[in-house]
Length: 148
Image (cartoon, rainbow, N blue to C red; front, side, top):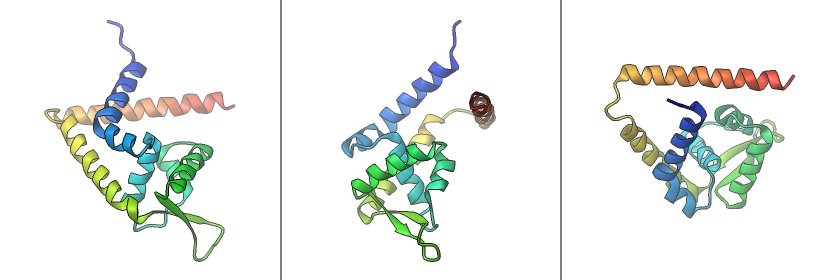
């Protein structure tokens, strides 16, 4: 049997994008990273979120996050607000028109998450998350070695 972790993960990623969010994201011409940014901002709307927080959460480089934030700001989905104590620091906030969409998508994500794990025993999910963590660690170690 010829199994590929990369192909399997890619297939799952495609299925999730198409079935969980595809229609809503497509209608608003958002990519998956932009969608992740909106959901993160919704979940943290009571906090001061800056670009660095997104870089850490989504695991993308500064330039990629900046490009996606520029698109979202251009579509009036987010705004960058200067900090009160340090005006050089910009905090990210959802625009009012985006909050209802983001709440809908967050609920859809939660329901879909429950649907795709239905019937999988908790012990098996624990193994899945542990293995995914190990794969992520291996990827990051490989990435760090190639940066030398």
